[in-house]
Amino acid sequence: MVRIIRWFATAVLLAVLFPGIAAANGHCPRPNPASEVTPPPDLFSKHGVLKVAMNYWSDIDAANRTLFCFSTADGQESPTLHVNPGDTIEITLTNRIIPLVNGPSEIVSNRKNRCGDKLMTLASVNMHFHGVNTSPRCHSDESIHTIVNSGQSFEYVIKVPKDEPPGLYWYHPHVHGIASMAVQGGASGAIVVEGIQNIQPAVAGLPERLIIIRDQPLLNGGAPDDGPMPNWDVNVNYVPVPFPAYPSAIIKTQRGTQEFWRVANACANTILDLQVVYDKKAQPLQVVGFDGVPAGSQDGKRQGTIVTQKHVLVPPAGRVEFIVNMPNNRVQQAYLATRAIKGGPASDTNPARTLAQLIATDAPVKLRRMPERSGPPNPQRFEGIDNAKVTAKRTLFFSEVPGHAAGHKPAGEPVNFFITVDGQVSKLFDPNNPPAIVTTKGAVEDWTIQNRTFEVHEFHMHQIHFKVLEENGVPVPKNQQQWYDTHQVGYWNGEGKYPYIKVRMDFRGAVVGDFVYHCHILDHEDGGMMAIIRVKPPRKKAQG
View (tube, rainbow, N blue to C red):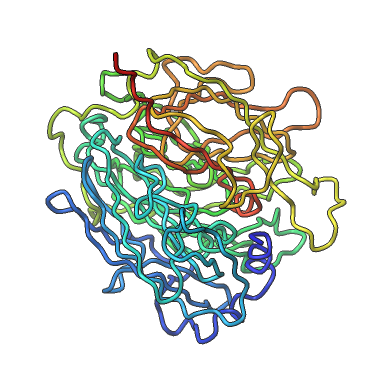
């Protein structure tokens, strides 16, 4: 039944299913192309709590594309939630979408696992707090059964662990079957866990620039001389950069200074390979964090390292934080751009394109500045993993049926996407499936994630991060191993061994319950490429 929901979500004009919605109501306003990139609104915790009411809205834009957004009662769209380790986020989420008329629906929970409404529709919503190592229980970061339907409200209480790494996280809807539609519509925002300057002192005092890149349905068709047509347009803090002209969003900056950029790929399906280019020359990016974890910070010393790169692959849902020098007076042209992605013969097209033009003047920028160092960092969530005993080893693989690269997919039939534990039968995700993996709190496991398809996939794990140990038979040097919550697995070319990554999973934290892992190309996740893992409480020691 979830496949029926997905088919309706992608194959029909959504404006027909959302009667009465028009762009004129302005719940999800969008800037024009070539506008200035402005920071999202900021909300900060007070006395250990960030409390906010969020409304979920939908609009139709001038091109008849469906928009979705989270906004506060006073109309602040997609606010950035700033919290400290140990804080609590309290959100009252209200679904303000007009109820659908004769749309498809299905029951996705039972008496034991129900969280909110039991009936899923195209207007349903929930929230996932991506990367935060918090509980998967109902009213926390539960995304399997949580359903909030039109006119309903739901209370979230997210307890940020005291040892949460400081860095960039994000929130977005995660209703299986319609996740891609909601995220393409723009319903997403950033979460910043404060304190990175205590681990990465190089960022202290720098202007902080938050950049959120989202994708959306393609606005224009193309001509033969327009170059490769992407599957999706993108925008930068909602400033659209449509194919084929790619009019750049505008970033105004101060000449000759340094800035601390926090960049989130909040796209549903678009893969980015980011670089900053001055006069056709890629600039060094001093990377201080990946996926919310300061680089090199988990070795017990609680001091980060800086990883200098000329470009950074950022999959959908990935985040990267780096220091970059702004243009000096000799630079004629300066751009933020993405390189072309070689995703395999079955993949979406992700061509090279400029995203934003940097315009430097001598005027100071109006950006929030990073605090100075305030003291030693907290204990870090994943430190000590190298000395921990590995309690299990597993192999999982991505697969697809039918193979649409071969061109024999029946008309109107979606591709079925799977992520399977080796030795088990491949199953499309269903929220009522039993867990594919059962483990225990305190476990440390090594997983090999294979790709048996002709396109890349982006492995994402909820609730915990993982450390990448090896890729395609090549060990990652110990001093270069980083922690991620989303990582790309390369495509298979039809010959030889399947591409893979080997990762270390850390279940030593407080997380207990059912949650999911999946490909974060959300069309693939909606198509079935997701499964459930259950973390059980530790076994009680026998008395005696």
